Amino acid sequence: MRLIDTTPARTAVYYAAGLCLLYTLVPALTFPNPPLDVVEGFAWGRELQLGYTKHPPMQAWLLELTYRLTGGTSGGYWLSAVSVALGYLFIWRLARRLGLSGQQAFWSLVLTSVTFYFTLPLPEFNPNILQIPVWAGMMLLFHRVLDKGRLLDWVLLGALAAFGLYTKYFVLLLIGAIGLYALVFADARRHVLRPGPWVAIAVCLGLLLPHTAWLLETDFLTLRYAASRSNPSTGFTDHLFNPLNFLAAQIGNHAGLFLVILAGLGWRGLKRVRQRRHETVKALPVPSDRFLLWFAILPLAVVLLASAVTGNEFEHMWGTPMFVLSGILAVRFVALPDVWPFPARALAAAIAIQAIFLGVLFGQAMLEPYWKHKQTRIHYPGKAIAQDMARVWKDRMGTDLAYVAGDMWSAANVTTQAPVRPSMFYLHDLTLSPWIDPKDVQDKGLMIVWRGDRETPLEEIRRYYPDAVREGSQTFAYQTSSSIPDVTVNWFIVPPGKVNFKPAH
Image 1: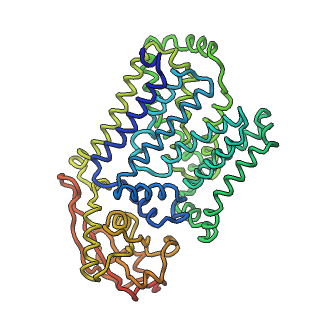
Image 2: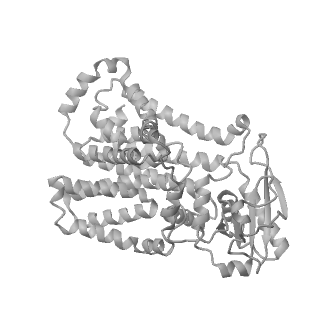
Image 3: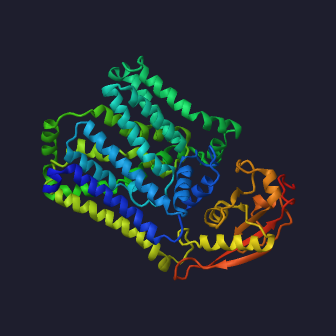
């Protein structure tokens, strides 16, 4: 452990950079097709709107930027790597600001890295992953402004809060925790009457004006969609089961952290951990434990309380950014690594856990189709289908395909991977696709696509074309040599001048 003892910052860089690189290269080299959230993001990003059906625009904007820089879809894997790398950087710096030594900051990073959200979900770059650096960065900046009160840090805090809201509205939970902290504690409350917080608020609100105008123009589309997708309570038991289920999932997502701690303790450490922990914690410089506990516990408590009161079921993955402090919390209050008799075993366990997770990703791409024999998104022949749909349209109409309508997966893959990227007319619904110009669609026509053996399009689209029957279909093999069933893609062409924008019934 000499390397960690003498150069913790350098070791942290090697460890974090190695992980980020591996979690980028494994899916980039083995996933034949991007995951669902990445395909959706590319389809939305092609339009460069101020908002989209499901989320604010930041994830889609960044994906579109990578597409324009590279001409391909591998940018999502690199964006996840950059997000997590920034998260590690902010976690390290916050740990140091809270009074932890370089060695303790290193272990904070390691323990955070083996929690589930920093592993298997990374290939699917989405707003949850993009929130990791936002939450860690905002906590770091808030701690800095409480300490130094510099106006520039307040400006940066406001800007990062706006970036977070352009990513996912869930960041409001952290903004609320910051505001409440500033009001509850006297040493933080002294800043309220100074210019800094108000400058931060002004910067945040100013940057949000364009998106707010978009929300008003679209009748709060993103919020209405989120409400329609929620799982409301169906009975009294939901008020108890749903929050407990969410909490159990978050504890389970920390299994890797618990295993690394136990590996470092061993049987010998378990027998004397209480005594050594008491001595070590007492001997350590006391960091801002109140700050750490507030931001580690309050957001989770609010989510659990909201679920208990409403009975709503919250997605487990919403917990992704809420636990960026888990490693720091463990190091501080378990007194790591001082209570460990076997720190080398702890590091070996962390590396082994990462190897297992990376192996699972590799297995999903290369081995899973051979034992599951079911259709998977990452093996979907998206590029072949997109190219064929573009060819069918060109042969029939003599022009490039400009618009494609259908369900999200069918249409978004064509939008993302066709040679000339058409616009996605999601479910042929102008409300869900506010970027669509009806006049331009009428002038250029559109292709309706859907999957399966059905002869007619989805019900949502049949409302506009009740007599529509597929004009053609093509079967495509999944991108694996296993016996995954082929996928059949159907299409129906609506020529210029024949597009319906009002339901027929």
